[in-house]
Length: 343
Image (cartoon, rainbow, N blue to C red; front, side):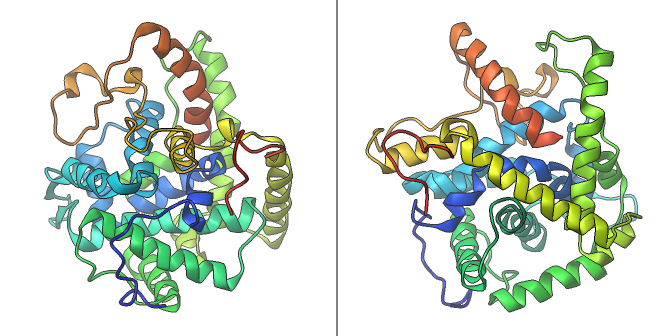
């Protein structure tokens, strides 16, 4: 099937491979990879440099953004509405970069690049950490990523027509378009500030995160295409590739024992429950915990997603549960009761 033939405006559902992989916690191990490769796109990197507060609050910024991003896959009949919500956050992100190049986050080429990186996130997590993909499954995921992209209501002009065309597009952008800019270096050299609610001495926190971020940089080096890796000044040997494959196999085996309540993002878990009839189809969508809201001086800006306020008791549990997901995002033995593992 080609992108032109993939004209369905229906949202993705639980029978899709994208549902199976996108909400999996293992995608968190590629946080540095996706942050860096997104920001290497010049127009996207310029928007991040001039409008983002990622370095002020990386855990909160990434964790709250994941909720609506997941929603475009998992929100069912409301997925297109979530896509419009995300578009709204990008309308005012525009300007001129240091080299005099104009940019706008809703430029179709820029917006599609961000989507392409999420698609490749799905491919990579399945390929390296979930047992691998057949060629037929990669083609299915390509068709699904086209259907997924339609939920944004964006121009389909930049979307490649086939899986083979996408591979050519991915190589060409990496070779000819991507660059190492300030936004990319900020990701590759990131220090994670300690959230105020974490009761741990800052030096201990810093030492805890150094190996986690270093490990993510190593994974990123392995996932970069050779041309991109060279631009980033990273080394990768055949021995590194063997180690990454062995590490991925260990992760795959370890996650056999991880229940869906931990393995799946809360927005994905709620979607499976609705699909299985264990939750109302019109139940409120799962939002990010309120403590992940942007800083007070950023409130009211249209580029930010503001989670609704939750009661203090619920917030305490949210902080404990989301800390695991947040930490792994930046740096099962049994399925959830009542359903079989996603096919």
